[in-house]
Each structure stands twice: as structure tokens, then as C-alpha cells.
Image (tube, one colour):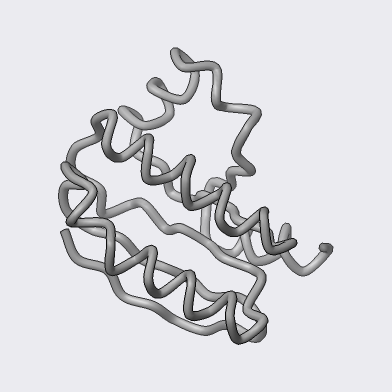
Amino acid sequence: MQFKTQQVDDVTVLMIEGKLLSEQETSGIKNQILQGLEHNQRKYIFDLKGIEFVNSACLNFLVSSKGIVSSKGGHMVLCNLPDQLKKLLVVTKLETFFSTAAKTGDALEMLRSV
């Protein structure tokens, strides 16, 4: 699993690629979020178009990341969701728990209004 970050105005875009199979693989992203929150970064986009495989560890990572961001008054939007993740969110009834957007540009628009 790899990730890159990009700053667009006051929004941090996390572009995640590969397989999120374990807690250890996601620790770098969580650390990035925690550091950002310490510096009053409150808006995050998770661009997931590069995700190759989705399992419970991936879902747990997304839920806990949203909890971390929300607990500090922040906002998180998922975009470019692979079909497998879309289906998993429906099956687990989490599709309304997350804010989602089709594309990164749509996610940026959503966060500009908060």
C-alpha cells in the first residue's frame, strides 16, 4: 500500500493505492492525519481509485479515520470508490456514514461548503 498527499487550498487529498490488508499498512496515513489535525488541518479527501482490494481492515481503517477526523471537528470525503468498496458500504449499511463523491473535484466542492 502506498499513499501520496496533495494540498488543495485548505483540503488535504490522500491518494491511496494498493491493498489495505492490515493495521500496520495504514499507520502512515493515520499519522499523517494526526499531524495535520495538530496543525488545524480539518478537511480530508480520501481518493481511493487506486485501491486494489477491499477487506475488513480497509473498512476498519476508513471508519476509524472518520472518527479521528470528526472528533476534532473535521470533515472527510471519500471519492473515486472502487465498485467492491461501494458494495461493501451498502452491505454493512455504512453508505450513509460516509460522505462520498464520484470525483476529486466533486469532493473539493463538498468541502468548500463546510
